[in-house]
Image 1 (tube, one colour):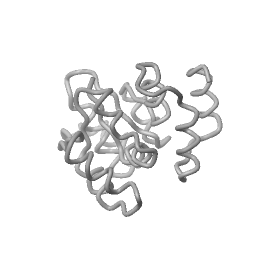
Image 2 (tube, one colour):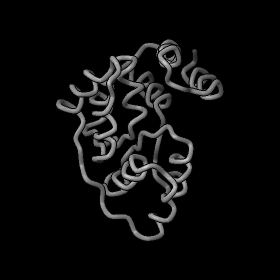
Image 3 (cartoon, one colour):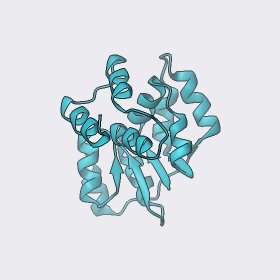
Image 4 (tube, one colour):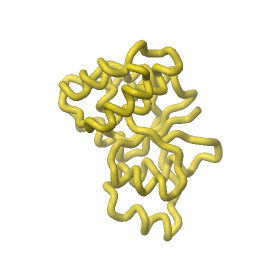
Length: 162
């Protein structure tokens, strides 16, 4: 599997020291140039973990140019989200887009792009036996300032059987 990610989920994974999950879940992990810039601008305690992942696991790739209709659909998104969606769509093989922003998710869904958010990625990691429980990780994310709605937490905990 290939994962293409936007900025937010990578920051969240770094906050809970779980960036290593990406390399265990996917054969390849990509980000577009704008997401790299946003990640390198981080100054929090997770910045060293992000820098290490950029050297070891995460590859930067320029997305393909979007057709006019897709460009119009994505015009209201920020540049990182736009590039992440474009990059995910540029691969011939199935790609899982990692994206938490609601507007970006809505646009990607309209384009038929398979996607999940950070909570969904943690659920996938549990299903593959890479983490033992999702609830503590979601709690840690929230306590560290990463916003995850009560509804998402409840759904993911239910799906995880926790």
